[in-house]
Image 1 (cartoon, helix red, strand yellow):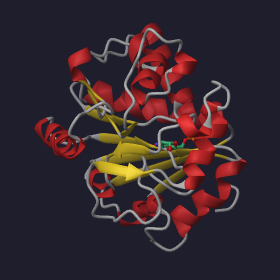
Image 2 (cartoon, helix red, strand yellow):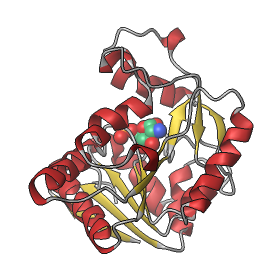
Image 3 (cartoon, protein in one colour):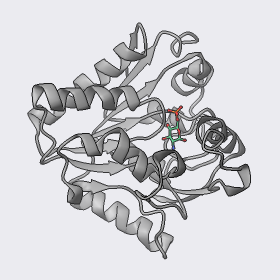
Image 4 (tube, rainbow, N blue to C red):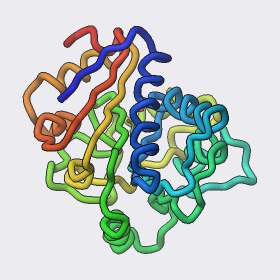
Length: 253
Ligand code: GLP
């Protein structure tokens, strides 16, 4: 695992975007796994800049997102702050600004009528696309990847997962409170790629910034490999993993 520490959030984001752009230039029809959360927003901003100013071309790129809230779908008739779907996040923070083709975008469908069957189909879609070339990951406050909450097996595949209390608290503070949405109205389940699904990606970039992430980053990268911190699965990863941190997130390593 290659750990890169950058001076600040902007430099961390620029480095990650540079690596993604390099893949797109060398393999225009690559498959990229995208993540949501505050962490990758700077990376997406830089990708948008590269698209607009340098002609970075997403027209053949295929995308698969890690997760989506169950029971939640994109609703463009609502203002962005009232639509907390990950589909809306990706639309606003990246997809609407670049030339990725709609039919090449895959985000788990939170409104599926048959989640179990749907999760199998999502796995099939990834396989049909030839697998994921590069998976971008953040890390949750409880050490999760995507929504693989503590206790999720390292052999887990795409499935429905109940959100842990810490995730519910983090989400409330980061998004729902500002939108005037009560704790009771927040989604409590999500569809998430599993740890085994993620570990099959050919390369991984994990991002973390800020002092709030310092302890959990140290646990995941240097602590015991345990399903209590599902991101510690990175230590089992066989492909090329790059961890890009700002100084604050790297402070406890
Ligand atoms: C959510 C997402 C994760 C993400 C995490 C961290 O739980 N499902 O994929 O890594 O948030 O979010 P943030 O980047 O805002 O800290």
